[in-house]
Image (cartoon, rainbow, N blue to C red):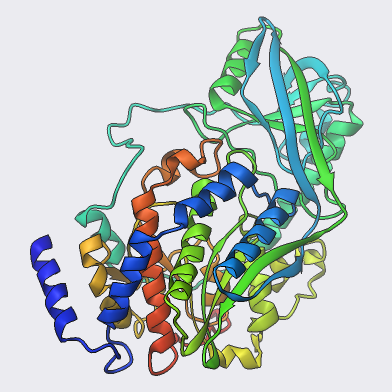
Length: 532
């Protein structure tokens, strides 16, 4: 089968002319140049190594994230991109971790694997105290713990069972034909789309703020929570980045196995004590976050955009989430610049901040340049982040640039190679994408699905009716081991896959820029209608 595909591609390349016939056909001559540059002179591994080994974790608002913004801006300039710049947006407090030490000291002494929860304070030196299990789900539950928490370290999560005996629990996986078919078969939406329960989420956050203050008022020293992952993988994501919303109590996330050991000891009647020393730094001199932008100027002011989120969490070095996507997007721009190519439409890169906190950088970029929504005047949402207060608000207010925007392409599912693209319900774009993938069937990329995929920055564009797309990627061990854990390091990225992805993305940028018109769009989003 592969030989047949290769022969077909070679035959088509011989008869194709450099120019696209109908505005959507493949320019095989340009594809050959892109493949040559991307495979034989790639810079993608150097880029990702600098972002991970040199700069390291890039939590939004942190000094390391600002360093990454400035380095990517300068690197894109070095590669010949124009008007490389940092675009500032409101965010909140900067925070980064310095060091963490957590020991169980009773009934025996042993070091525990722990990481500080982001945007929580440090312990301001060594603290030591007995552990108490705390389960508080409402205001009434607080009464049970009054007078019992002074000098204590609180276990606030339930113990979580670890099941590793599943015969299908494969850490490393590539998509086979069955997996690709499952993605390509369209899932018909059922029912009316509803709001995401922003008010309910806000109430949970407000209750947590009251609960944190209760712990402090009662004299607790710190709290520990359990990692959601097993196999000693940790996660420590916190979201209290807003000025004035900093939790008052130090908090760490323990490896699940270590947390479960504490739980078992306490259930067995043992006295459990911990010693903790957590050092973190808040940076309040700059409460903005930045997107890195740069252009390959075209002969028109219409825009084709490529992007990925540059920020990460603070445990590992943010290699596959998402230095991989950022490095691939940068490499796609480098390839086109190295070919001394002047596009018809301006090709722009956006490396976003604040993705991990809710697509903040991409959403604010869209609101500033293309389309925005009004802010809700609902008093129940007055305490919510601004992006929450805009959710599902109408009308969508577009700018002049809205009509000049062609497409946005995103990469954010690890370092696995591209296997196709999610057309995000855009049935007019799907056959065009199928054509543009033809030169890459020999690289395993040939699936186009009308299905939507979520969880990353293309949604900021799709939500206001702009064509925004995410590529289908091989999972590898992204979800099973690396996503938001301390294992997200350079060692787990795959060079051949990154090169393949950069070449495909560069080709998509080229063909989108050179097609006769803008990429087709879906109908503009409309307000939900609910029948009585």
